[in-house]
Amino acid sequence: MIGRPTGRIDARDIVTGRAKYAGDLEVAGAKPTVVARPPTLGGRLVSVDDRAARAMPGVHAVVKVAGGVAVVAESFHHAFKARDALRITWRPGPLASLSDAAIRSRLRAAVPSVGAPPRGSAQVEGEFEFAFVSHAPMEVMTAVADVRADRAEIWFSSQTPMDARESIASAIGLPKSKVRVHVVRGGGSFGRRLNHDAAIEAALISKAARRPVKLMWSRGDDIRHGRMRGASHHRIRASHAWGRVVAFSHAMASVSESYEGQGLAAQGGVAVRGGVTTVAAGPLPSDNGLYNFGRVSGSSGSIELAMPLGAWRSVDSGTMRTAEEIVVDEVAAELGKDPVAFRRGTLRNKAVKAVLDKVAAAGNWGRPLPSGQAQGVAVHEEYGSCVACLVEIDATDPKNPRVTKVVMAADVGTAVNPRGLEAQLMGTAVDGISTVLRAGLHIDRGAVREGSFADFRYARQQHSPLRFEAHIMPSRREPGGAGELGVPAAAGAVANAYARATRTRPRRFPINF
Image (cartoon, rainbow, N blue to C red; front, side, top):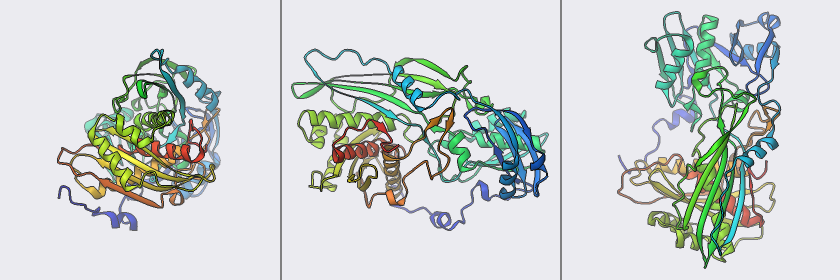
């Protein structure tokens, strides 16, 4: 089977609705449940008048939980109607005075110095901002919980079921030997289901209501109160002399987590007094050895915010390599060199050069395009694998750009299932298009402004490339990583294509935000 392109044996079940997710489960007595949540991140319940909600048809229970007020009802329709009938007074969360501009300012101030450049060198410099981004998996957070006095049983999708079991047991006061976790098929994740907020909450609601529950976070719940990729600010300086880069410095600061998880310490972090703390600088968590750039240095700082963050696909590389690949293009332009030729002359790894050559040839790099359209390229190396991406974009309308073509090439060692790898690369291309051009979260006075796919503008079918190619390089090496590999290259290529098409230097992402 290894190396043979194979389709998913459950693909038909998934697309026809036969595949079962947590929300499809029929657990005896488990009733639909939703939670009324505060308008601000980390807001606290002051008081609730639930008389009208309790009197509504189909309502079985109304209970207070750490994250708000839960309604258990005969159907989700009944539950949402009753939730909206609750009269609740909230105490604002610790970030209620904080919005995007202040967060960006604090991030900028937390970026360490890049030091002095080498004598006699010229500089190419850039500062880059990346917004918060929701995970927003297609299946919202859902968990079924049946908690009794002496045992508990929970059904949910999890990337960390053993940790989840321990956290649930601690939260409900049972030994973990008395907690049984059923791992259910997940409808998307890439980091969101590392955290088990919904499962712990469902268990606590079941315990308080003394009945099994089927908890569903609405799309708005997850975008406004779920885990997100932290915002970050990057300062990069490339020093060049005699036609080559002699030093490369990358300093950055990101928002890191200091969050109670709606009162659940097991979810990590302790809320900071006042909501914000600056953390001392440390070494940069990045591989900067991709290019032969002389003296390479990096450092990082952070600010802690009492908000729910989580590992988003590609984690740090999705922003750091993107910013670096933009600067690589700008250095090439400064030196009067073609972006592909410049990379070929400075890349250290032959495998990275090979994937770059592949996309340049397959994508017909350098072909003439009409005004307002352009190509962009970027590379990345991580997880024992490497990838290159070539993008063509139509930015005739800079406010509504369209990626028309994506060509990717990856060397992951032995590709266990080439067809699955192609699908992973396609997904990373869409992630790169989304986070560079369209999709981000605004923070307004301690609240997430977006609440659905209507305003959290992830790429839809109409924004997908008209043409997509994935080339898997033959290899006999051990398999490397693939699922997160492609995001930095895709994002960097989209940003570079947009810059060349519009003759601008984009610095804040997403560009149309």
